Figure (cartoon, each protein chain N blue to C red):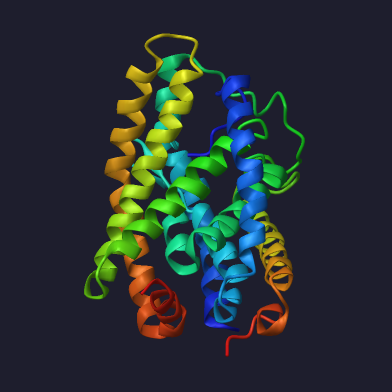
Length: 100
Length: 210
């Protein structure tokens, strides 16, 4: 496998350690959350949600596995759109992902 | 830094969308000017930024962060290519995982795909050739700090309180200035690695900039 893609796969595989385990252990709290709490703003994400994959979970799977599956799903979609964009820019090597 | 639905009022949501729609269309029109040798970077960079953003770093007793990647995208692909990479990432995060709201997508794109990308690119471009790695660090740090401040302004003016900005600017600006050091370090390391392993990706950009 190309080293660039191997790195992406590695990031996704280890991501639950940071995105699920450590987040639950320490409590994930972005500066945005701190500011919103001080202002009394309300997050409407759950009330307006449209996706079964909310917060990188997959229904029926444990959080860590759902996080990995979500990661590969997201990477695949983003990469597919990226290839489509490269093709839109004008064929050539970009469309095949090969670098001269 | 992904602002969820509910945090911004309709006026701020509308204003940011009014800016970002023509900006996105213009970015697509400029995309064809990106050098051919760099186009292959778009899918893998977008995928890598998406994956890297899943690695949250909770800091005990404080706050948390994750890599954003806007400055790195700007440095590698320029302002328009960098924008489109971040656009793809933020669009998929929003639509598929509801990470960042749909009403706030314009604001999130403005912060992470416009400001972060442009600042990172501008600092990198302004630096002399021998200081490009330092510029990658400083550009990423300043990019994330200004993106945080922009998010703070958007939150502050949406708060329906005259004290909104007095609360949000110090929190968002201060924390992101501190956490941005990590963004800068990762960006500089990635830049250094590419400079060593794939200098053609940086060389074309430098040649174009020079």
